[in-house]
Image (cartoon, rainbow, N blue to C red; front, side):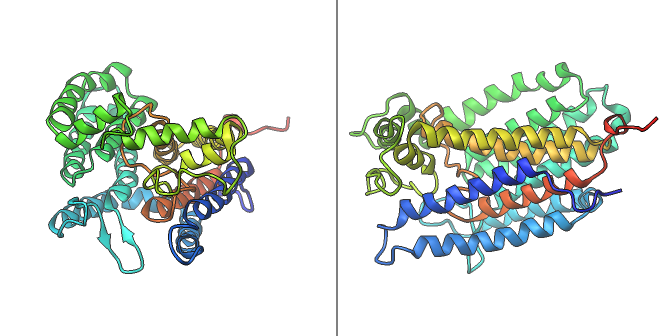
Length: 366
């Protein structure tokens, strides 16, 4: 039976603090961008309102709903990926967005969640075959086809994300490790060859990552991002006092907002953000593994992996540990599809936390 009036406070407080940090960071990053200093902040708050509604709805939905409709949701996500490929490209020549008027929807964000649902449902249906190679082959094959659709947009970073997410989920499941890892040795070289080395755009990103040089087009952003952290030092230059946002670092309110936090709040502020994401990861994994149902376990692990993988990708790009991949920082970056989906993930995790725990975790009175 669902535990009434129960909420995982460490998870919720960490999430709420990140949202507050995001409000301050978005305002600081954008108040000089237009004649109206509150333009981006008002739009971000509007996205937060929609996202909060999404969180409440997700929190209200029983886990059985996701289990019953997992395959249907996955099919819808694939259809949306096809739809976005049919639409005309945007100003950058890519096909990643569906314009809904009030905001733009990115199907590749939705397909991450749909993939988690598909894997959770498939593994729960094949519990009697988890000691065989069959589930691994089927899951990698289907997710691989979805990844190809995402890569064609092109959004190779999201395709790589799907591959890593799938591997993590399978590794965390009862499947044998050798079954999970064997296909990786065949898939990874294919991905590197055809989606990185054969792509001029991806290859230029690699060059910029290896040689961050402000005088080169591909090395400009990595250099400016690292410069932000160098300027911030241990304590930062002060909230609102950063200078990298003054047309030095493009997309600072979305793809490079962690650099802004590093410049204005220093090592202390950056470490706080990383710590809060670690708390969400820890609580999310603990909440998920306390459940008896395999579907619920995989669903919980999946959504918390999406949150933390997005955060890690974003931070590593900003620190130039990874080449630029265009990932926003959950709960903090300027609003959109990623923000709304991140709130939904928290709603699902909070709902899972209300579900009854394993019998072995229940104290018995003798």
